[in-house]
Length: 294
Image (cartoon, rainbow, N blue to C red; front, side):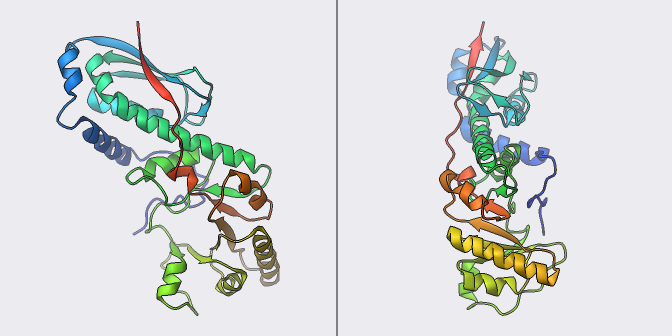
């Protein structure tokens, strides 16, 4: 049990090569099927070309290594020269990569490479907007498990590139007792025995539930869809309780219905974490194109 634990980690963002390879190969199989019929019928076998990747809008670049992997899987002889590093700002019209090699491989891998690069750059860009918007508050912006199926590893990498933090990567990473767990078990008067090395978080929906959860001193309490006033009160109660007990502070997380208009006010309450599903589940992809050059 347990995956690479990125929960609120500040460690350097990096992609697992094996997982990256698996994700990209699956995307290529999905797109190519039995073969790229058009390219096979129209492009000479040994025709070589040069191409560039150009961004059509300002963005945070993320995923050039992912795009490169798509081209390399199709034809390992394709040369891919990144002009930017992940996390850098690219202005509209900038060339972010130069590509050369056999035309068949470049054109066959083009769509998968662009789809992944455009989506990851969008996640990183949106995350950076949220992180910048709440400055100078020390609240950490995190993602959720509301990710595109099969792409969680990549999307959560993009969140870290954008300056955000990861919540749990999967169900095996930490214990999170949510409302449905509590409903099924008719509440709780004690916590389960926690395996060594696992953090525990409890979801609450009002201040009475919060006071009850705080008694158990979990690592995190999630304040689900609570008002600004209730979040402020919960922070105050937590601070007063921890000051008297000298116990390591329980972190508080605001979740549910957070958007760009509300996130700064939520951060101003003194909350430790704000989790935002919209970072990954509904981003508008960045416009990036591949253009063949003379």
